[in-house]
Image (cartoon, rainbow, N blue to C red; front, side, top):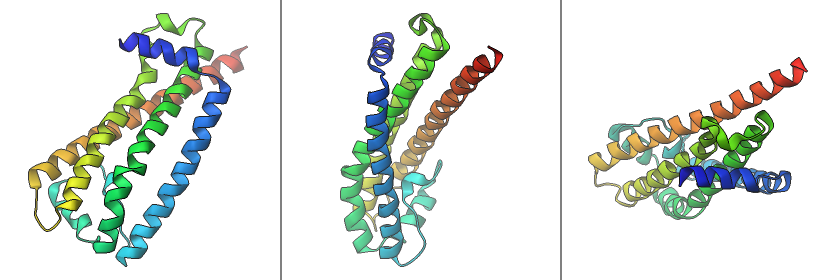
Length: 186
């Protein structure tokens, strides 16, 4: 199944598809920057979304959530359930297509390479991002009641998300460097 999905990504990867997803991703990143600025402005203090932490604890989660006033919480929950559910789909698809492109320019037949599954790692990031978002929504929606077990679990899921994100970006960097080294040797 995984090999088939990887193979399909290698088939559909085209410059136009990459450009479309890059454009959508750029628009979404702009939206997230504005949302982050709104959260800080509405909270009245410099704060950040919980998603940007790395392996946060329950105490750190509630320290951040405490900086969110009612206006921030009423904005943050629908934002997490809409835009932050679309965003993982966009970035994982774009990074997977970019990885597929880099696999294709590095190997004549990447389908037969063990490394070909590297183009699926962004989807692992998205999988954990979705679960992290749901955990954050429950924590923020139930604020004033501490759900420490859920907060700690959400922090672990958050850390796993960032590890997969780092692996996906490192893979893209390595594939790009491999391609550049091959180009300079020719």
